[in-house]
Image (cartoon, rainbow, N blue to C red):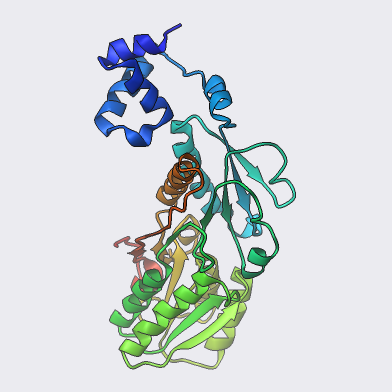
Length: 324
């Protein structure tokens, strides 16, 4: 079996450098990491992480806690998990999915939490002595990563206004106390006010069926041109179905935008114009931030908001060409 000394010799670096690459990759230049990783690959060298974990009092385990109904967000979280696991794998960490009840069963080094709601902050779910990173905006002082929800809503609202729509309805999720929804609503209202237009908002469950019924009621006795800025792709799917029922022509007398851009936007016909979040990249950054926090003995890491992109498709353009 290859040894650490063999790797050092193949990469033409010191054993100490190899050790730093393995144990503290954040402290080593990308050039050195590339040299060492290539040597490890060529020699089929596998570090003894069990021994390292024992010395450092680490488990090499990260837990991922989802606090919302997985059946309403499953495509989204598959992408998020891909990003998290991809980054953790680089550092030889394993990932465990846990629930509120199981999160403290077994040892682990850190916790990523998503789906935190207003009441969860006071429920004691975060009363743990391990480093934590949240996926989702919060104003409680916890480190977090999210997409820029306010900017995303701005992009969607501005898009339909540029198409000439004057009546623009915001269909939000009935979680008004949650920061992500506050931000999306704020982005929509800011653009509406900037164009001297009156905001019109409704809040419903994140369900395509509920959204279809709400849109049906709004369209039933109204033939005006109308655009819907939806807080999720799931809601947008329902609104599109209602528009088709009334024979609306997308891009002419009706427009619909979604939010997230992960799978659901492409199963609708027409495809949904949406605010696309770089979910895999955000997952990778979640893992990096948490590992850095573990290495810093729990020191606060702050927060990062990723830039969204708007993807124009058939639900606003009348065809399914995809432009950002």
